[in-house]
Length: 418
Ligand code: SAJ
Image (tube, rainbow, N blue to C red):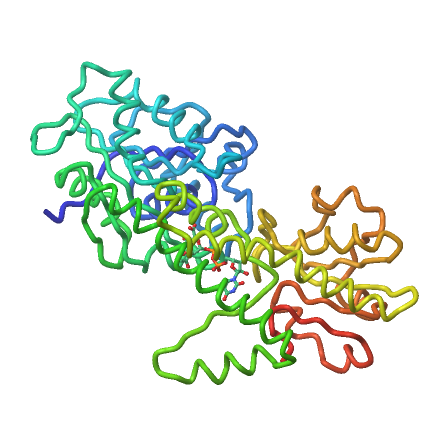
């Protein structure tokens, strides 16, 4: 069955995934209604604006809204299909907080009619799509829910994890392969009809729990490999060997591809998702847990190195370049750079620390309590500094001439100035 979805589709959650998905469908002729609890987000989309920075998204949103294909509202409407793209953060015990998913499912439930499709895109522990079905079923005993080995369900539930890379969302949304896991094979087939509208990559059909697990495994794989690079960095530091040179050489082996060490792992996905695997099988996941702990300790280690370098000066000025969680995005959520700056500012309360980031225009709330921090332009910060710490390899930072760094202590956590 290679049919294409046509009709009205509502996406719950107009964030980094929901909004680009809405645009991908709307610009290909689907009538899309974006739903968000935040009235400011709804108002921005209604004006054809984007509430966050992502290359090529702004022009796509204004085009889709102008064409009348994309609208936004705070109320869940009636539709033929629903995509849930709300956050799944973790609780204090690192289990998944599914309250936003549950709320979305319960808002959709009263609107459902036989034949509707419900897709969960939010990254979720194995079994969540099944729970969505149960939450909906508890409110709609009049509808026949899909069950193993039975045909003839009224509603089709599936999980289709998002896999796009922030900074490349508009490209990867179209070109990536998609995994679509249904509660039954028919559910998977119905949900795939939505993604076939815009996806150029292959659509891989499976069961819901395998799709849920595959997504978590992708991010845990990356986390473990970054932890390997970060551990390597600490080992080579102690042995006075240049980690970047070692990685450059080792990566010339045809079956070796070591990732880059850095000040830690940020964002809202990689530092979170591996914990869902650990929570599902705590005694069987020592490697995944240790990798998480290594990456979580990184900002503190990097800050300690900076503090040690500062001891050589009587009253040093320190410049920290980069605050976002990775290069060339404006996202500061779970940013290791901010953690590094916070640690340095606390450890050296009498030292002036200049912070610069071309994507951040106001003091991040997490740093507001430190009176020894000043937001500066990068060139001025470098000019005034005795110690320059590169925390994020934004393009404009990579372009800083080496001559400007002459005579200063330079700590390049990203290997961008080699
Ligand atoms: N990082 C390193 N060293 C590296 C690569 C990354 O320290 O060699 C750091 C980054 O600086 C950043 C963090 O890791 O702080 C994560 O960055 P990232 O670019 O690896 O990934 P995200 O969080 O932007 O997006 C990931 C992607 N997952 C994978 O590559 C397996 C993306 O495809 C997912 O859609 C996204 O998580 C998600 O939403 O789950």
